[in-house]
Image 1 (cartoon, rainbow, N blue to C red):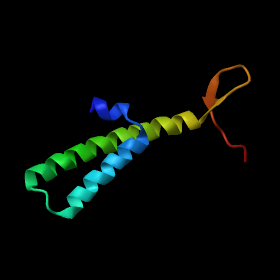
Image 2: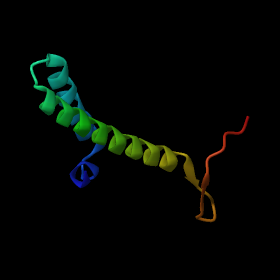
Image 3: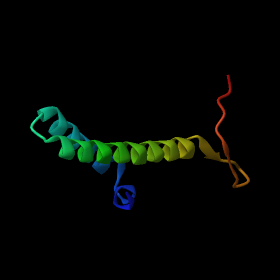
Image 4: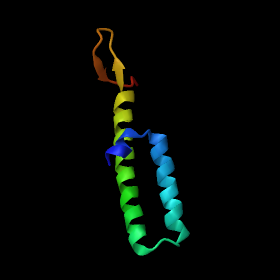
Length: 75
């Protein structure tokens, strides 16, 4: 899975789309389908981790004193 972690989010989504199309095609044998499904789930986890990290980064702002703090919306 290390190779997936090195890829950009968009590349992973493309890989995932290819796997889904292969599985939807219905011409893949059972063993290959299981392998593809397993790989897809690994890709989903890496994508989820990347999205979580991106969300955390976006929710941080730089305070005047240079410290990072949680972003809060004033209502």
